[in-house]
Length: 148
Image 1: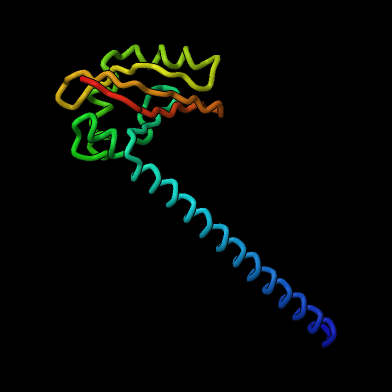
Image 2 (image 1 turned 90 degrees about the vertical axis):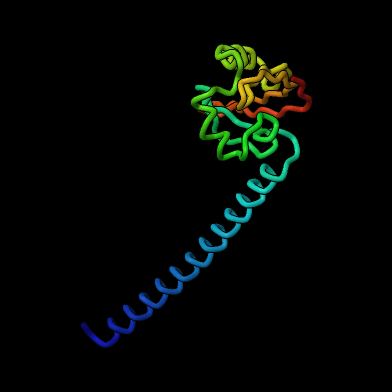
């Protein structure tokens, strides 16, 4: 290789390194923005005084907040998420299937959900259900009034 060829290759490598540094800086900024956005969403869920929870298409609990855990008598949302698959969230196991069918034609539905407390008692909760139409669908619940 001639000296000119080496100089051209060095310039090309320097350009590649500069491009990689710029791409890495852009990626770092994007990742930081995503982390900040996720933290805001997490804080909004955790700090919300209204019971919120989300189920997947099969009725599996994806996420719940502390307000729902307190309402149902659990020590924390972690305990709720651990025990709900065993104890069940709805008093009637078929209620979620009815909700899923009812939301097929409309994205938001207001229902009275019969929820099972940790101690086994049944709680009636006026609830708004929003069905996310993405694939797979998910269901977000907001309880705005409750009575034993």
